Picture: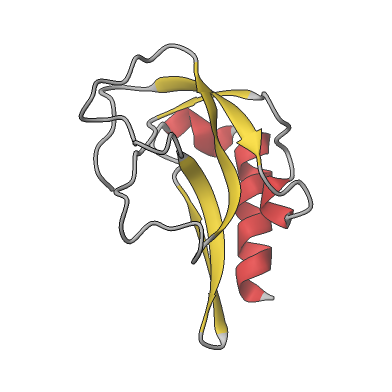
Length: 117
């Protein structure tokens, strides 16, 4: 990753693939709080990754020039195929409260379901 704002951030989630099992539990505009990572331009690429969730809006955070991505693309969950396997990634899970949240649990189990076929 490139950086992240200090502390926990509140965001509104943008569901990019509502049919993906890892999207279960979230709807467009769901407000969520966790530590959000901002990824470098490379190797992050929508051409190589299938984006599941992204940040639709930062609700309590003003990014500085060093944190902003030029393309405004803040993906937080994706998957991809690698050889004969599957990879799932989520940026959620830094705030201990998230692990007890049913929405996150559905997201995590959906991603594991995808990764294990």
